[in-house]
Structures are given as C-alpha cells and as structure tokens.
Image (cartoon, rainbow, N blue to C red; front, side, top):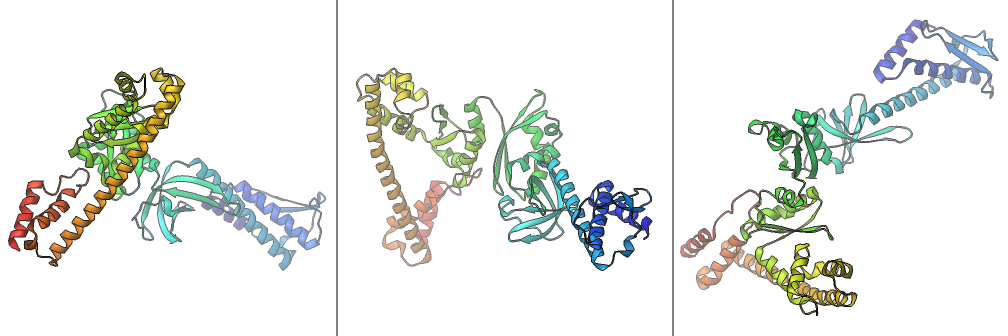
Length: 461
C-alpha cells in the first residue's frame, strides 16, 4: 500500500471538505477495524484495533492488543467492500457535521452564491461547498434566476435532517434589507445609525425607520446617499422594489405621521386600550395615505406597531357626533366626559363596545350600572351604523358598476351619446373622477379636464 499517496488524498479531502485531518484518520482506523471483523467473521467490537501514523500513514493492526500479521491487501473483496462503505459513510458524517457547525455560525448573515436550478419552485443555490435552498415563499415575487447567476441572500435557518444538512436562504425576509444596508452604508454597520423597524412586502415596497446616535449624522440622508447613490444600489439588487426611509421618533404620533408619508396628516388620535391610531387626513390626501391596494397604511401599521385607521375630517366628525349622541342619552354622561373619551382615542361606538365597562368606570368614574347601560346603547347603535355602512357600500358598488357599464357601451360605440347626453357625460365623468392615482403620482386629470374631455367626446359623436 502506498501510504504517502493515501496521506496526500486525506490532505486533499480535508482541505476540500473543510474537515479536520485527524477526523479522517480516525475514520480510516474505524473502517479498517470493520474490515478486520468482516474478514475474520467476528462480532466482538473490542477484538480488533487499528492505528494510523499521521505523518507516514503506516497502518498497524492489533488483535487483543497483539500485533496482527496481516496487511490490508490480504482482506479480499468482501472485507474491502466493507472498508469502502464504512469510509464513505464516516466521511459523509464528518462533512455534514462540518457544514452544520460552519453555517450555524453564519445564520443571520448575508451570503453570495450561484444559482444552480429550480426544484419544485425552490431555488437551489451553491454557496461555497454547500447546496442551499430558497423556498418559493422566501423568494421575491416575479424574480427569476438562470443557472450560473449570482445570488445574494440571507441565511434564514440551518437544520440537521439526519442524513443531510438543510440550509435555508431568503431574499423576502425584512432582515435581508437590513443586511443590505449594512453592506452599503458604513454608518449602519458601525451602529452610528440604527435601524429601528422594518415593514416589507417583498417585491413591492419596504418602509424602514432609522435613527442616529450622533446629532451630526442625518440618518435618512446617510441611508439615501449623495443623489440617492446608496439606496439606488439596494433598489437595483431588489429589482426596483420601492424603499421608504422614515425618521424614527419615540413619540408614536410623530412616528405614525412619518410612516404614512408622502401623505400629509392633519390629526392623530391614539387609543392605548385598543392599540389603535385614528389618523385624520384631507380628502385630497386620502388616496396617498391609504396607498395602492392599502399598501401604504398597511406597511405604516406594521412599522409602528399600531392598528391604523384613516378617516377624512367629515368621517371623523360624523363618528364623534354619533358617539356623543349615543352616550349623552345615558344619565350622568356629559359632553365633557365624551370629550375625555375622545382624548383617550375612543372616538366611535365600536370602540366603547370593544373596551367594555371597566374602562368607562375607571376613566369616566361611572357606576357599574351606568357603564353597562352606556355599552348596551353603543352596541345597539353600532349595529345600526354597520347596516348603514353596508348599505352605502352596496349602493356605491352598484353605482360604480352602472357607470363603468355605461362608459364601456359609449366608448365601444354600442350606445349613441347624443340620445342621452347627460347620462353619457355622467358615465364618462364618473369613470374619470373615481380613478384613484397611485402613491406619489398626481391625478391623471382634474374634474375640469374630465368635463372638457366628456364634452369633446359628446361633441365629436
């Protein structure tokens, strides 16, 4: 046996697989003992032993601690096959343990690998010597990698599955954004700027609240970079995902106002009992505050930890009026006490029903009987309000459907607008006025422009 060649092979395996050479030598000794037991047909685990010189590679076999005058070449095919199987299994176990130790220490880190293939929707990524898995739920929607593409991801979890180590990556996790900023923004890495909170809908939009421990460092400006250079790199990495960076504030009201930007907020009422924030915005800011499909307010709520309701001034006043009319029917409840409730963030009959009698007793100093009566009245009024809201919603949807159908008929030429000019104009204007602009964009046309366009269409027909 060429022991020098054997030791060179062990050195190569140790380097390539990142396994200690001493472990490989121990595996070799164990495999040799198994081969001896197979050759001699014994079941006694203590009968044979083996030592391998770590420098020369010389193999010494012992039987009950007495030197065994036999060389590995004498074992024959069956014993050699046993030796091979044991060696392969032990080497795989050592490699699995090495991977487990290495990537457990890298959990929560940013890694770069190479895309290999897709397996039932999951992306297989080669990172160093390990095959990692990025499940479909951890991928950015719409993102597709080709074999050989560079993939940067976040090590989400490492699990020992017995026969193999599963390393899970993510590009959809909010912490992926955090680690990208640590790479691109030195102030984030050295903790001069702290990322306080992140809310993300992967592939679409992210809101991030930042604060600086150094008054000379502008947290938002440092994250954006000169002319947006730093944030542009991150947006490119995320294939155009929007990132809103807002300034952190210990005041929940200021933080909520910052989180709902670009919308301008008029007033914020906080209800600590319910964890709810009622935000009042002007009519022209309502679509911006809510965002496309509710995305802006949804992310703002996640970022701040508050359940956020958006109301216009008219809706806010109507809600308060309903609450006041209901509660003042109860003997001992005055307008001042209703105002005190409103100051605590309870502005609707629904809020009073939800908080129950204990809060009314403690905050308004009501007796249990009076508090119970107030909650019962609010519950009755809440049912009426729900029915009204459901009816108004159904009517609005029906009206919108009729307007869309009428406009479609006119534009397709099925109906002559000259037969009923007023209905035609209403249909066209309804479609124009109801159009909601996307966040950060101006409306496609003003009501005057819509009227002009309807007039042109009608005149032209």
